[in-house]
Image (cartoon, one colour):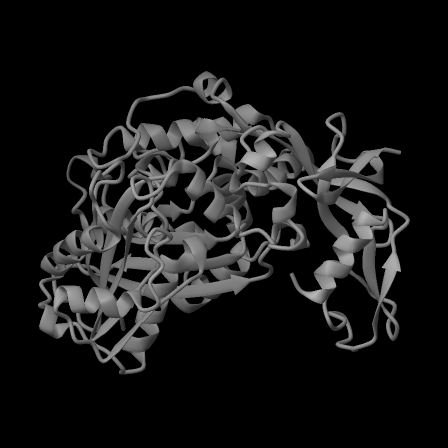
Length: 120
Length: 380
């Protein structure tokens, strides 16, 4: 895992959802990169998301890819549009549908803290 | 000018004891025979990749195996779009004067050469290794996220998706080489095992063994050669979480480039070969490319427009959904069938005489798009 990904996932361990914002053009981006996709600046900075957003899409996974996830199945994977203006993949509460307003929580699975969105 | 002079596709399904190289050899020998081109005349060779056989130089390996000594040779990787990418590149190499006869080949024992878990795990890696794969998604889950949103925006139902699985099975039932040939109905699709909502087992293509090969030539070496009249690509993202607009994934952009080259419009197309890894793939591609209005492809299926006897026959071999999916060759089978149908070589499956065909493939999660336009030249 590269340094940017390590910083994102250590944020999850600390209960923080971390995204990037450009210090020059204010563009928010996820997933993290070494430069701004909008203006090509190197001055991208980390920002802690407020963790509030909207479900763009969601699927309930019944057939898991690995033994670790088979123990958790069925589980819901969502694409969430954060209020800061970026989209990311995460887990979601099973009751959530497209358009629902959500807030982030975290749960431990397989020695990793994974973001899971709950109804706001 | 460039022509598709010879095509071949092995039966797809479970071929115990097969290997990637062995399957490719079968397809190549048949394609060369059909093209009436000798191995010594092949001066270019392009190969796909094989997940069961991740060799560093697969194209060179195939060349050596077949006794071919090309002047231009390498493998290509763009997921399910690899096959059409090879054919598009072959056409460019011929138009530039670099080569005269180029062999495009792919095949693998994706079903019998590994466990189902291994296949599902290796394929799920098309997701982002740091920001998607850690959540435990599968390839069906990536497409299910598109499906859930697409159905939501257009007020469509799961039974609309199921129509495409039924149509592909109808077509496969007429092809002896298809992996899954038993007829199904919409209820059977809706009642099949849940995989990743809204997709059920029968919304997903099977994993198969098989191979396909195509010869692209400067001259029409046989009377049945088809001319490649246009080609286009578009690449807008790699990962599902990075798709900006599910109605503009790049499919239309790739098709627009191909149609601009061919100097024809959508209404002149009389046969379709459209990538169908999942029912939602087929629905979204047909609608974005413009062969149905947004939200209306399922209505056209119900009307019979895409059946073998309809106005615009679609994947008459049964597509990935029922002919089967063995990786790169799965996306080549659509082109093989288009060539057979347009050239009048489809045997018992032969449709009425048609001139123009459009074939489209996507790799990844609607990530890499290639469209190709074929024309049967008027005969004397």
